[in-house]
Image (cartoon, rainbow, N blue to C red; front, side, top):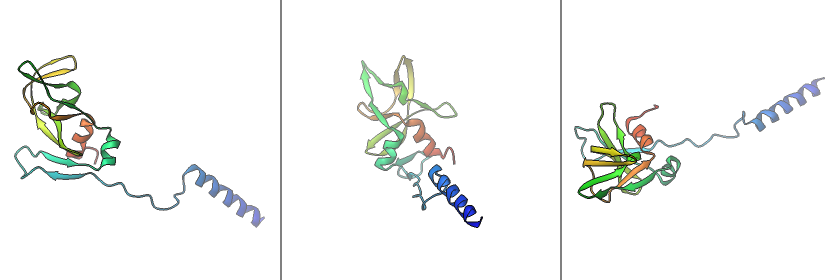
Length: 143
């Protein structure tokens, strides 16, 4: 009788292990992306977000450049973010895996194109996919 109980325990443990309920060692702890202030802390509190290659890949970050249409700066609509008070922003990347919010002043939106009164220079790389996640990282959303 005692050996039957032992086999039942072994079978149950194997089933739990196969189901992933028993951990076979400590899983590596995920690192929180590193945040660095851009220069001195200014009144806007804009932070520079520095990610590792794997973190950038996991977020699926993609880019588009600021262009010019006639005399107006243009950018894709999917790079545009609004803060809770209605401020207009985009995340720019001047170097690999480093991102910082940049202020914008929108003149008009036509389809998937945004025309700017004020914004980053032509050729600036703006985050089009993953910008909302960067915003969450900057402000600690979900913590």
